[in-house]
Length: 250
Image (cartoon, rainbow, N blue to C red; front, side, top):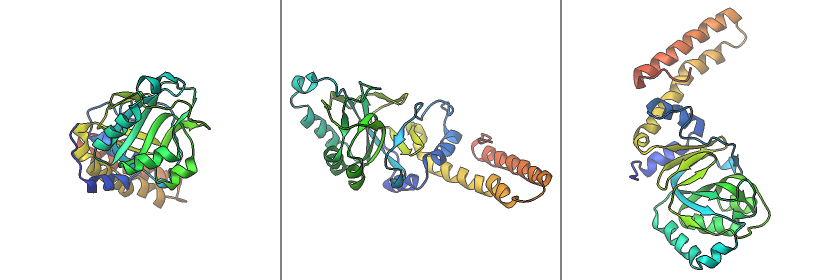
């Protein structure tokens, strides 16, 4: 997939939380914004203090319960890391665990997170388990995961650079991802270029209309509050429609 954003664009996207990015995305996309793009199952952010992460997907499939994979491909780790090193960053490692929902072992811990950070990866989304969360945090490697566990079992790269399915969402290598404590959003290639502008515009639209009305109306007569708020909602929709041809979320 073609990368259409500059590093400055990615830094701009990282300044906003994922719901704000979604608010902009739904205005510019032709996809079903009520169903497509984001995780459909609950996911846990174990480093929320790091804020959002933005990067391009690199993918891998694991099956920690199965001891046959390391025997079938003794060079698997070296080949997988060569793939990781060949893709420019920033990268988010998306890991599909074939054992889910059972968590036999963690692919991620102190060692693997430090190695991947050195290879230009900013974090991971895995529907399996992680461990060593304090050490991963210290490495600056963000993790959204199904849960935590003690051991690593037979965590081994089974296949990589392939389509994966995590938390109800299919992800392809090279897709742009924005993720934080709310979940993650996979941005279609055709929506990347307008995304930052749209997110900024919709956030400003909210602040100048709905939020401003609600905050300035605290303690006023309820009838006045409702009248002001309804007018603000109308203005919000008109502004969004004039910009994008859509009415916005309200």
